[in-house]
Length: 114
Length: 117
Image (cartoon, rainbow over all chains, first blue to last red; front, side, top):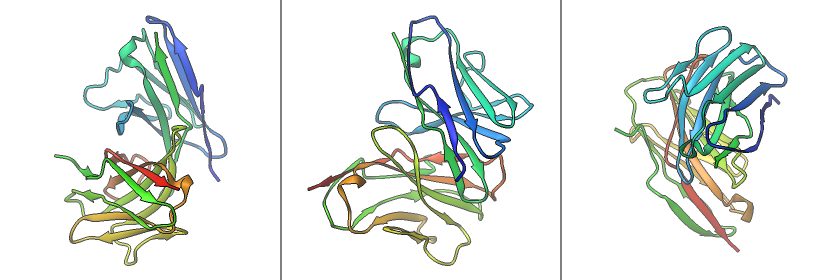
């Protein structure tokens, strides 16, 4: 079946640095990728929708200059957390879509900013 | 207003018993889709089952079935013969509108299920 590969699975970074998270579609073309954020013991909150070759659409309250999304090809979408701070520590997960009822998630990235 | 409501933050169930996880939703769109996902401690999101708003029959996938009560806007997940490996967080989710590649899925707050040996 279709697979979305997300890397890294875990990352610890220093405050003020930037972190890039990648999601690759391995055997299908992902024209659209959704990026979610999940705080501990909470639900997934949609951050932004990226479309190949165009600017991402951000949900209300999400800083686009803070969370840079690039979807330059049909198989790769990236989320960069710029100038990370401890409050950015969270679980980030991407999702792509195939067909009516199928949605494929990446494995998720647990970001810890120290 | 919440679009997806899961009223059970946590549940404890004895192994081999059936369990029902509640989910109600709110939408005025006649076309929508309902999903259930399982999230173990590793964090991955595992797709369990899907129900389209126009589907006549309740969806079933192995030990999972979706009790779809359209008039009540209810989409409860039923797990039959629960197993220890079913212990996880379970999320109900909804897509509003007909399927297209730009669809968004909205998640409920989740239910933490604990299966007791």
